[in-house]
Each structure stands twice: as C-alpha cells, then as structure tokens.
Length: 309
Figure: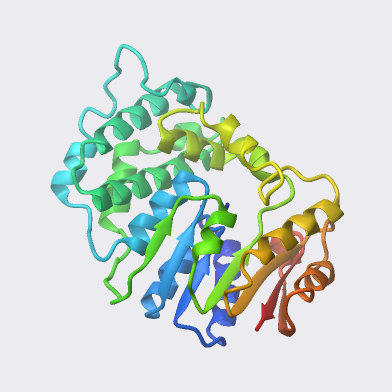
C-alpha cells in the first residue's frame, strides 16, 4: 500500500534484479501499491496475481497488469476531458475541495464523472491511471510554485500520448481488491512477493497523497473509516509495539504456507530489523538467502530481501 523518482527507480531495479535470480512462472503480490514491478514481470512472461485493499492501486493494476492490450483512444480522451474546467452547481465529491485548489478540485471531479461514462472497463482503468498521475503532478507543487503548473488537461493529454505499452503476455493475470489475508489464502502461485505495510497502517496513508488517491477513485472520502476499522488486528492496522507487528506478520504468513516460495522485502528504519523479520519467517521456512542493498542515502535505511524456499 505504496510519483516515480530516481530513488524509486533504484529500489525497483534492486527488486527486479533479485526476482530475476529466482525460478518461478507465477507470482502473487498481496500488497501491491504502484504496479511498476508487476508491469515489468508481465513483460517477462510471468503470470501475475496482484492485490491491494486500496481501490486506487487496484484500478492502476487493472490498467497495467490485468489489461491484455486495451489502450485509451482519442475518442475516449475527448470524452474524459469534456468540459473538465466547467464548474457544476456542486461537486460530486466535496472532499476534493479540502485537498487541493478549487479549480483543481473542479477538474478532477468532472474528469471522474466523465470516466464513469466509458463503456470499456479497461479504458476506464487506463483513464483512472492517467488521472492519478496528474494528481501526482499536482501534489509535486507547493504554494510557492503552484503558479508554474500547466493546465491539467494538457498534462493528462501528454501522459496519454506517452502511455506505457500494455501487452498480452499469454498469461491469465488478475488484479484483486481484497483484504490481503483473504487474497493470499486463495492464491495459487509459485512465488509470493510481499512488502508488508508499515506499522503506521492505513490511518497514516489517509493523511498523504494515497489518501487523496483513494478518496478520488472512490468518489467519496466517507469510506476511509470503515476501511481502517476493518484492518484492526491485521497488517495495515496502526501498531505501536514491535511484538504486535511481528505477530501480525506471523498471522499473515500462516495463511501463505501453501505457496512454495516466498520473497519478502523489508526496509530497516529503526522499528523492526531484518533479523527480527527473519526470525518470524524461520518459524515457517528455512531462509535460503538474504540480499542486501543500502539505500540509507535515499530512504533512511537498508532495503533487505529475505528469500524463503
């Protein structure tokens, strides 16, 4: 539950370099976030099953992973951007006005309503993805630089013209929007790749750009409270002690025992060490190898892969 920067790309490159060393034909990713890794795995010919409890991540995965080649057309773009800056009597999603400028809120509200009119579900997913990238663009500006922003319609159009290739890789790829425990219990793959949610949980995500993404995609901010409440006692809950957090990891891994191989990514940030995570994993599997790369200069810690066979 995860704006592409140079540090993000370096981290992605490290993850991909590790996964290239493993033998697998199918992979389950229970906490997807931005589906950049999954997009590359699809190009490698892997069957990808991706999941996230947040609908913004689900829609992006539907566009880039589950989608087998559908692309947004010029006619679609014209519909999505139709009268995007024209104010309505009231916003469909009034929460937007508290998250951004009034003119930006009007644009995103109108674009969301227009996207609902696209008959093809994967075209809707592609349009959602481009609009979410426009949101990343908007939030990359502060009050001092806001006047430098380009018109959002122009940004959307440029993103569409440079949109990623989406291919049919001959595999049945799935994108799911479920609670991770439920997803992993039903997944049947060779490998599980997991980045566990941070101990601050969904409540912390609500306050950042992910909170805006989720409120915009859902068309309301009213769903946050039940979403947070439903994670009580599971990964994604707000956790204060390391013992509780490690127990939540153990509870999750219990539901993933049927998957032959695990690859688990962990960032050491002073709360939980890789050794402590490894001790939990050893309760279930032998650790074959650990790959380390120091990202302290960009993410505040060491990104550690624990590979379990």
